[in-house]
Image (tube, rainbow, N blue to C red; front, side, top):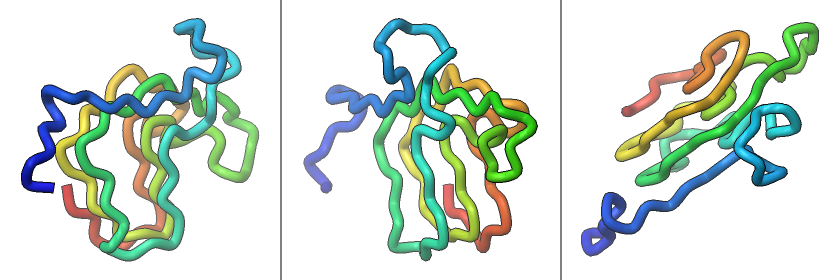
Length: 102
């Protein structure tokens, strides 16, 4: 890990399932952390193009398009979270969670 250069070697996690650069049809959440502890580490990623666009859905498909944390204590570091779209918490949504380390 100490030799990893996450700036020079960008790793992109995208919700753009169609590869067309448009939001319709994209995944609701690019990254989901559900019921995890601090051993779940999200480190050195660009997280983009999530589309949590369903406000009527009771199962969280309207929040946390980039990163959705539900009942977790995940660690997020060295991440760029951009161009995500949601009704609530487009970049990161922390829901019913313990401490989150950023």
